[in-house]
Length: 404
Image 1 (tube, rainbow, N blue to C red):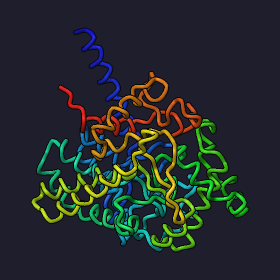
Image 2 (tube, one colour):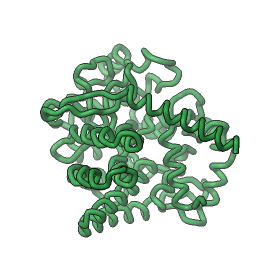
Image 3 (cartoon, rainbow, N blue to C red):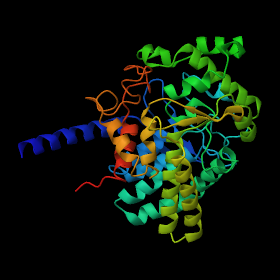
């Protein structure tokens, strides 16, 4: 009994700390003449709004301040382009220290008037976030009105992704930049990035990165991507900018093009979530459409299982390639979210998860297996644990393992 009380006390303290961070990182922006609250990752370098970060924050905020959760979604959708694209960053025009900032992306012709954005996207978690908000909102009438107001924009984003990132109708979307995968400098990207020869990166881009890069000015630079990685990141941004952010051209010419397991597992889960939203609103035709997309992706994800490695593997599809990427990262568990893991495969994943030399560590599951030669306990996404990936792990397991 005392242990239960102690555990509950610790949980409440952790909850309070999380709330304090969410509230202290609250920011106010003006959209169409109205003030909208949003959450920024930090008050230092990361003073802008990131797409899947905000979808996650909204899921936390619904438990403590529902209107702020709705504002979070309103704010992130305010950066939507006419073609349905949602950018991975909406910039705070008052903050100029972050690199690469709006002057590097040059998307003003395409983003909404008065809103500065990047030109690539991030994992499409916002669809799932909407259903999570509905499930956990204390006032169902209020959340239904909210859903009615935002579903058309999220629907448009999903239609954009299906049209431009799965033109071959395989069920799997293509990402064209490591930052689109969310796990920025994961070992998953090492091999695809080598398609970009450093000698092909213009000197002006290298100098720009070396002189303007802002993430090394705070915290420990050993936590961050290396210079060669950043040179390649900005090479891709410059390449896409030259296409005038034409999505068809971007996918076709990008030396980095990957069918990512985590991105597509979230895509599947979010399509199923949209179907649930439309079904709840008595729109069966729309519900059937997105349920169909979820089923297609679920089947395609099953095809990414390697019997030999007992891993779900990303695939490098740049310039006609079809090369599996052999890396043991947290992403291999993502198909649990999509219910794409068969009962025959599940024991292998559980064995991997509960192996102390891989993911069963004293801390929550790391982002890269401890026994991987790429594991780095300090460098982001190459080892250190993240709350969002552990949430996915727990949520995905609940699709298979029912707790009393």
